[in-house]
Image (tube, rainbow, N blue to C red; front, side, top):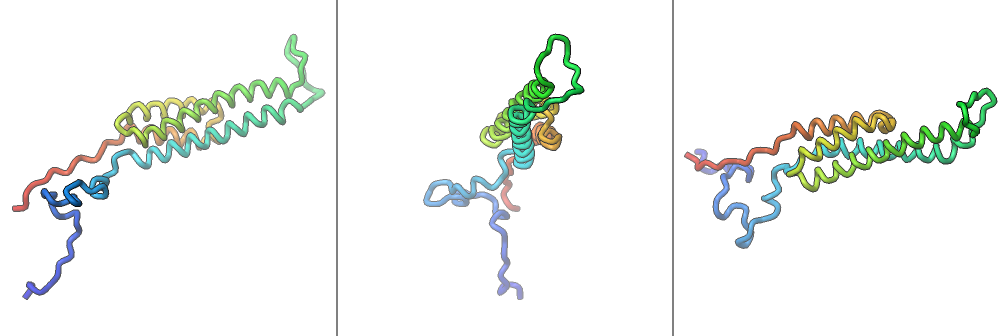
Length: 172
């Protein structure tokens, strides 16, 4: 009775054979890229976190160059020996912190990109993302959200394990 029925089976159900996954005697590119070979979500989180850190610190560097030096206050008690304006003093502090945060953000972003390009060295990239995301807090951390995303991405990268290769057993 059931001999006339058509059974639809996913191509992933069949065990690999000598002809499966080959096109014209060569291995097909589409069949070789079925598994995720790198930590996708952690690298995206780290990339977004690093980008937020970089953008926010570029904004802070711009503010410390353009806006802060022009601030003046009559109630400012300058430190001993300082003859400049209070805005110039604030611009120096904010600018130094922003440059430090910018360097941290660039390292986080580059490590996230290299995580996608060289997943075999994921421990190294995960440690760099984690350390420089934590240090990015001192550079205001991209509205704090950037550093938090980088920390989460770094931890997820260090915890990520590559998917096991499928062992093929002949059907019984």
